[in-house]
Length: 380
Image 1 (cartoon, rainbow, N blue to C red):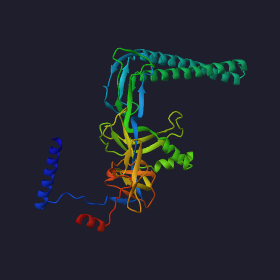
Image 2: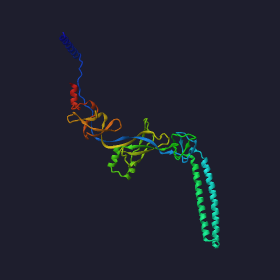
Image 3: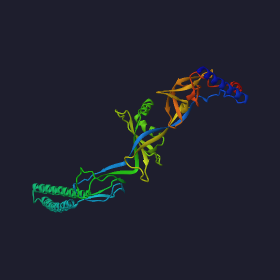
Image 4: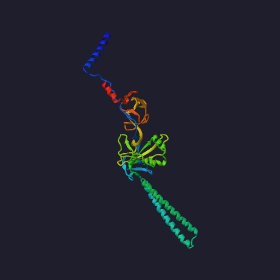
């Protein structure tokens, strides 16, 4: 019974096939078509090198008092833009004022003593010339006068010091910039060890980043000397700062410094890029990415879709003389443009490789067909 059923199915299929043929319906035919290929050559490309960076003000200043005392007034708020010389904090100045007044009184006393000593010296000098007093008395009066002059100088220095201390009671901004966090409050007792705030000079900002070991090695291979670093920096391209949210800062920056000492732990150099900050949009502590375009000359560039990845290996399909494809292992590096790779090893100029459709090629498969072969396949 089962054998008869199988024969019935076979007969039905045969009848359907005959029916399709009698109706003029063609069965699908396998056609031959060439894969897209390219001939390898060398060309130039501009690569965007990227470095993680952190912003820092050109003049980030820790604001601390020069004298001890009670904080009487805070003249600014956190995040406020201030100008150079603008008052920031005021410390109780009463003690400093009293010290100034005492120093001024001591100066007046010293001036009076100096005047008396001068008169005595000049009197003894006249008497000595008339041989009325001895040289001993003249020398003593001269020494007393010099001591009085020294006392005046000391008293005047004390007055100046008291004036300076009084001036220290008003703390002003020594650079224009942005006020950071203010951890103190009015009424606090402060001293030269107390940090009042951080003032970030933000008219110009520095983006600090580490130059990779590969760049360091390239500089060493070029035989660059210490006095040639500035010329090297001057020739570097302009840099772009990309914030963490992907926003591109509108002003371009220039590399202004490159440390001459390699960090022994990281094997890198520290570089700084200077950015103008006319609108105050950059702040100290902002993190982002520095992008600098570098030209690579005479490199082999292939489309990313021509490279087939197999686990940790990369390969392309090289077209042989008989139009068949064979897999060739290559080493590549990303260009950063999202569409191309630079081939470091595995290919030579003049090689022909499969591009579009490389993922569908099998080892030894014929990938190029002549026009006659295509026409013949189509007519069958």
